[in-house]
Each structure stands twice: as C-alpha cells, then as structure tokens.
Image 1 (cartoon, rainbow, N blue to C red):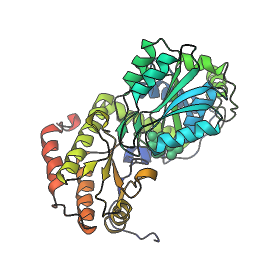
Image 2 (spheres, rainbow, N blue to C red):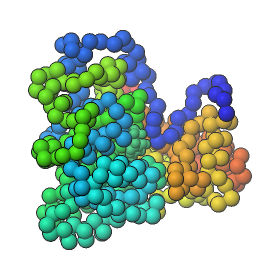
Image 3 (cartoon, rainbow, N blue to C red):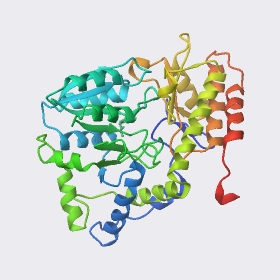
Image 4 (tube, rainbow, N blue to C red):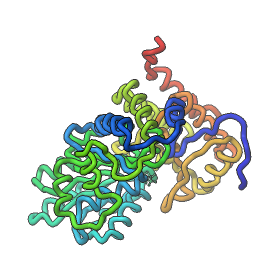
Length: 401
Ligand code: PLP
C-alpha cells in the first residue's frame, strides 16, 4: 500500500529501529565537519571512553564502526578467528540463524546447537561439548544474548561458568544487539571477549553505527586470526587510536554527536535505572499479554526478555494481518513474526528511549487490532493490567520532584 499521511505520531514499537529522542535529533541536526580537525578526535575520545560504561567493561577496547549489527558480527568473527576454526553457535531464532549463516559463509566450522524457537540456548549441551573438548579444538562460543525474533534472553553468566569450570580457552563472542544498554550486561564480569550492538536499538539512534568492545584476549587473537578483513580490521582503528586521530576512514559526524547526546541521556537517567525501566516495561507487557489470554512465545520465565515480547496468536488468526492492520488503521508499528514463527507471532518492542505511557498507548492499539481481527479481547484488559502494575512501580522522575 502507498504511504498515506496520518495525523499524530507513529507509534513505533518494532524492536529496532526505535524512537529517537528529541535531544538526539537536535544534536544530530548539524553540518558536516572536518574529521581531521582537533574537535572530532576530542569528541571521539569521550565516546570511546563512555561506550565502555554501557558494556560494563574497563579492560575492553571499544570500536565505533560505520555499519549495522550484521557488520559488527562480521567484525567480531574475522578479527578473532581463522577459516576452518570450530565454533559452537546456538540457533534459537531468526537472528541467531542469520549469524550462523554468516559464520558458515565465512568458512568457519560451525557446530550448531539448535533449540525450539521460544526456548533459550541449550547450555547443558554446551557443557558436554566443552567437557569433551580436551584438546581445545573449539575456538569460540557465539551466542545471541537476546533473540529479538522470539523474545528470549540467554544466560551469559552460565556460559562463562561452564568455560571456567573446564578452564576452556574458547573465545566468548556475544551479540548484544537487542540487549546492551537495556538489559543487565556485564562484559568484564562475564568474561566476554567480544560484545557488540547496533546504534538503532537500545541507544535510540539512527541505524549506522556498529559498537563493539574487545577484551585483551580478543585483541591478542587478532595476531593469529587469518580471516580476510579489510574494512572491519581493528588494527586500522588501533593505528589511528595511537595517533590520537581515531578514524581510519570518514565517520558520520552527525551520528557521533547523536551518540554523545544518547550517552548523556543514559547517564543522566543512570544506567541501572535504564535497565530497571526496561524491566518494568517488559513486565507490564507480559501482564497485558496474560490479561488478553494470549501466550508469550518465550516458553519459560527464565528466558523472558525485557526488550521485546513475541506474542502467539490463535491458529485462526494470521499474525501478519495484525501487524498490517495496526499500521494501516492505527499508525502503530509492531514487529512481524519471522521465518519459523511467521504468521504465528507478532512482536512488541519495548526498548530504548521509551516510557510507561507510550507503552500503554501501544497496548491499547494492540487491543483494538485484536478485536478487528476477530480475537475476543476485552478492550482495556491489558491496559488495565499494565497500568495497575505501573501505578505501583513507576518511580518519580527525580528532576521533577
Ligand atoms: N542481532 C540481533 C539480535 C538483532 O535483533 C538484529 C536486528 O534486528 C541483528 C543482529 C542485525 O542487526 P542489523 O539489522 O543492524 O544488521
């Protein structure tokens, strides 16, 4: 259907790209600058220092790469591994599937551990593979922290525990695209070697920056990693870090100023408060789903995601029709079900710069659409469940007291 103007704001509730706050939009509304002037390196230096905080790392080396999450994946893999290296990778949904596809196309020897979509990574299988791997043939563990297609959050602390238990030296590579800066994420504490995200997710920026941190062990691995890499070569960045100019090629000036503003907002709110806000939004969404009498695609409480909820619909309803109607009739953007869960789930993204009342607007919209497609939901039931929870759990905004 052709684009049709609708009054008011679009309610953007896909799990990325997400809403960009006004402060960030204003910070990006500027001319280009010479990135070799003293100003851009000075700005870049603050960004590199400050992104480490959202990864909870002090020992990691950060990289801001003009790319998306997919490019950040490639950068993580090619800088640390060689073709033919055995890696263990968990297939639990569309994004882990796409990462595995990339790993295979880059000629790694991928040992895929598959779970039913809606379940988390099978860490018992990881434990048995690691226990058996006495000669350390496994070079890396690749895991998506939060599978955006199914709303499943994996337990990274347990992965670390398994590797430590067997003193296994495999690199621990983590996709934090829909988790970093929204969910509890502890790069140093969990011994993660490469963690990565994309600017259009919890940081609430436009798409276009891949943001990574590499542990000292990952940097050491670059010395023997034989994968071909050019654009994504960390050594090119490190060379310019040493020179204090930071950029091997032209950065997006607007995105750098946007990132500065986005990080300032996160620190003003407090990272722990940001994480707690996501926990509230996630819980409220799940309470609404329950009140509607629908099921969360996530099969157990241990994996529920506070950034995205995938909602199963009864078999007589096509979930794609829900997404279509939400956009067409109510200017509400919801996430489609992808691949194996296409037609079976729709998704509500609740990440980034988002507050309680915005979410209630989305939940009200979902109720209208559910009725439109013939699901007998009681209007207001999910909104009431979420509101009751918010009333007791929403903290006062300290600057407004
Ligand atoms: N990983 C996860 C968990 C994602 O949700 C996505 C995109 O939604 C990606 C990777 C791919 O990121 P991009 O589309 O920025 O390349």
